Amino acid sequence: MKKKLLSLLMVGAMSASLFAGCGATEEEDNKNDTSKQSSAENETPDKFDELQTIKLYQMNTAFSNDNAAVTEAINKISEEKINVKVELNQLDIGSYIEQLPLMMSSGEKFDLVMCTAIPTCGFTTMQAQGQLMDITEYVDDYAKETKELLSEYLPSTTIDGKIYALPCYRQYNSSIYLEMRQDILNELGLAEEAEKLTSWTEVEALFEKVYAKLDTLPSDMQVSALFGPTDNQGTMLTPGSIVLCGDKFSDAIGFDALGDNYKYIYTDTATHTVKNMFELDEYKQVIERLDKWASKGWIYKNALADTDNSGDTGCRNGVYFAYLSTGEFGQDAVKEAEVAKELCTIEIASIPITTQTGRQWSWAVPAKSENPEAAVAFLNLMYTDPDIENLLVYGIEGTDYDVVDGQAVVRQDAKYMSSDFFYGNQFNAIPKSGNGADFREKALENMKNAPFSEFYGLAVDTSEVSDTVTAVYTVLQKYQLPMEAGSKSYADNNATLLKECESAGIKTLIDYYQQKVDSFVK
Image 1 (spheres, rainbow, N blue to C red):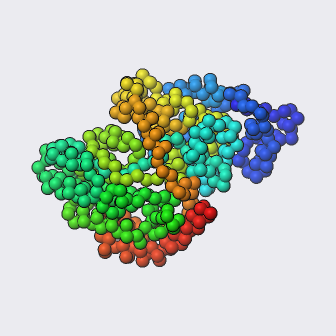
Image 2: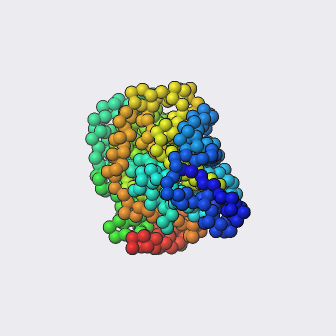
Image 3: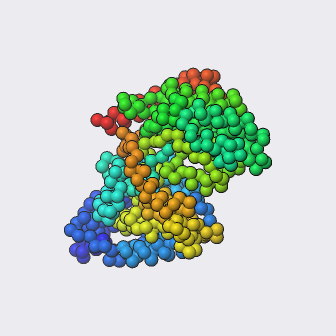
């Protein structure tokens, strides 16, 4: 893996073309710049001849990380193995959302960027704006092992045959779960019944029993409502990419939303047809079930306004007994850690692996990077070296965490922490305490058996119709969100929702998605 030097004869002729992605003239020059054409050599040495320095920016969920020791430990490995030194810049969520778009649009020069599930800092947005580099040749030359590892999943970040990012190798498949507080179930003698749930009829029968006894619970188990929202938009029974229709859990339909974050798109796999979600009888079934729960007084009535008590947070704060969550294999242990309570976790239905799943957490090289070779070489190390993975996830062993029985136990006084799905290869990370030493092996096997969306590789970019998307979303805020939070009924609002969505141009959006699907399946 050698950074090739220009010959003396070439320096004078090509002095104007040092870096890739810096304008049309430079791009043309770079086609002939052998310093960027590593494939010109028949063999690629393991290390760069000279120390390369790259700058990385990422989002991190821990707001007060001290990553100096972690950076030093990572560089000790990366300098020895590939002669690359990395500057690790980690920003909290708010800062990343605010600063990254400005950095990218201003052309600030750095070498690696984390693409997140947040649209403004996501792959689709940055790639559509020309802010990400085509790294196809660099992956071929500097990340052969990673390319092989990701062979099935690379279509998610490949556009017109060009690779623009490497998706994190993580649990791509997910499911919808019903989360219920185990202490309340135990107190009421309903634990065994809860573990056997297979239908909404059975869920409602259980809820009836819990609701009737809420006032009799000990003070530390008192809750404000039986059922709460899964997110800060008040969503109760309509998580994305799945319709929880029918009575049996097995009746639910998982589908590919093609990148739609507003939940108005439904794709029919059998007919390759894109449909308006709000016209479906299956959608009607779900909202009418929620209406029934609202009439019984089961749901958290302040879900739309109280964004601080959604999902895990609301359950942890004792606001409600149960809620839906979306997650991967091992969800029970993850949620119990986040809620700080024992939970009864029941899998409702699974969602196919979609393009959006691969794009949500990925690593790209900004278009203005001046050292893409070293950036991709470091990515290859991130995806293949377990020591790098564990440093990025847990920090320094013996300082930030300990390994006990093959599992990582995070210390109370840890100076560093992060999330295991943020980085190259989640399956190289030591399992967190409580998951079991063989958790990664089980999770990988579970993912390999999961189905792919028939439209894998397609995620629709709606920038061409962004005004129409905005107009439709304005309508959705008035009707869809309240209906899905249980504060407005289906009977009183869906017809108006459909009418106003039609006026806002939803058919234009449906047709736009349909054109993309038709082109993809040909």
